[in-house]
Length: 217
Length: 304
Image (tube, rainbow over all chains, first blue to last red; front, side, top):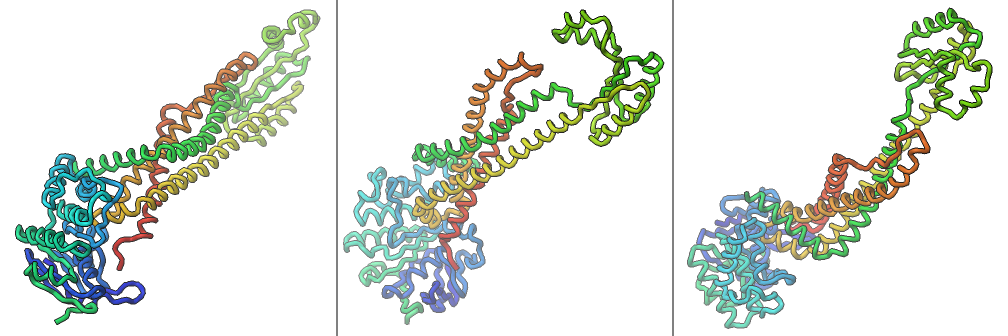
């Protein structure tokens, strides 16, 4: 599903976030990327989701070399990747429903199909009754779940989550992790990052440890 | 089908954005409409003048007046010489009696003319030249014909027609310049407004791109918004032009009997309406397109 070969990511200014990472993730697999903040976890996730491009090395997703894709092709590839952002990236000027519907509007789904899928996604994360709520009216955990609903509304084959339990208290965190495990069980490839040891223990999945931009032993 | 829905959604979004800030958009549309009305009114003035003068005979012609003592034989000789000249389209002979009748009929001098013992008018020819005769060639003919025996004088009235033509071309150029400058203004003003919109919608654009919107997806509603603004400005400009034209028309028509011209304001026809509205719409589209592309490059999501 995802294949990293000697991937280097250097940001403008010279900071090297990844220094030659090689990694393979099979379809249907669930992988937790662990490490301290600044270890390069977020960068690795963004490269896998086609949000950023590698400075050197190759990133293959479903056999496609992301470095060789044009901007438009990369955008279309992102439609098949659900990304749960650390800072949620919700739009605060529209309802929960409209936030989740955004990816479907981009793909020009019909109104009926959009409604069906949005409600299904909200139902899966337990927010079905809150579709008319504005994001500011939602708690931190609910905002996180709203972000997850938006990530899965396109029924992606790959779900990527950056610190999904980061700012949540333990109970909420566990519920979110169980949600990801459930998606994985129905065949979705899940790639998530966390610095929370308890979370990793609960997931019982493959772990990849990063330290200072390289794979740690 | 999906393509159609994509554009339908973008159009609906553009209308929604237009209605979300009706005052801001209205102001810019009014400004653009008034700006477009300027060259439109100039064009209407020009077409009006053109229509009025079209009824005038601007083909160059030369009048050849015979001496009062010219005999029929003299007249015949001159007529042959005139007809033999290349570049002459038609020769009309006006006898002195005929000229007197015409003068009596068209002026108020009948009583005075009746009091005269003799007809003071000479025989004359009106020579119509083929189109495109230059001022020099007319002057040459004039000198040549003045030397014919028993010809008293030759008059050519080419100059005023030429001058009129110059003024019309001058007016045409002013209209072209006005249109060009104000068309550019439409593109720039719409572009500027759309750029502001892009900046205020930055969060939405960023999130859209993150979840898979291409540059075209982002651009589409803005492009329709620009198209709508341009289109509405064009229609408003035309409406202003028609309103002003109608208002002036009544006055102008009242002048018709005073001159031997048909005076009326020539308003834009349907073809011009369509061309102006579509042109303004396309300029709005262009302005929006350029503005969005520039802004998208400024905050490109995926950096190398």
